[in-house]
Amino acid sequence: MSRLVCHLKEHRARAGLTQAALAEAVGVSRKTINTVENGVFVPSTPLALKIARVLGVPVEEVFSLEEEEG
Image (cartoon, rainbow, N blue to C red; front, side, top):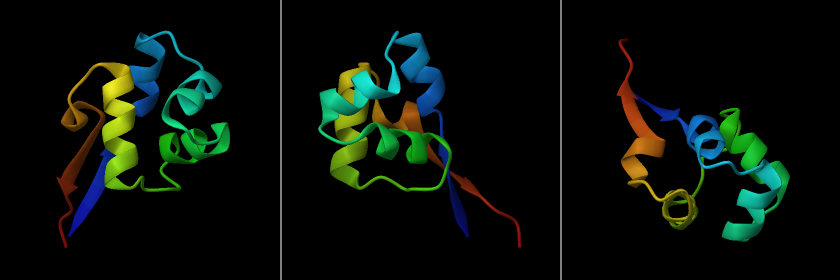
């Protein structure tokens, strides 16, 4: 089984963006960005790609899969 690992908060902070600014840039609500950062919501592929584009990094640096033992 795989688990999504999200480094959005770190990349967003490094880019100097607030949740609201990133949300506006990708066309979602601030709450959506918050829930992605907190692991409550898994973004769609298009949203993940938009986020990475705005942050100027490959999508794999923001989101990755970690194998879970079990």
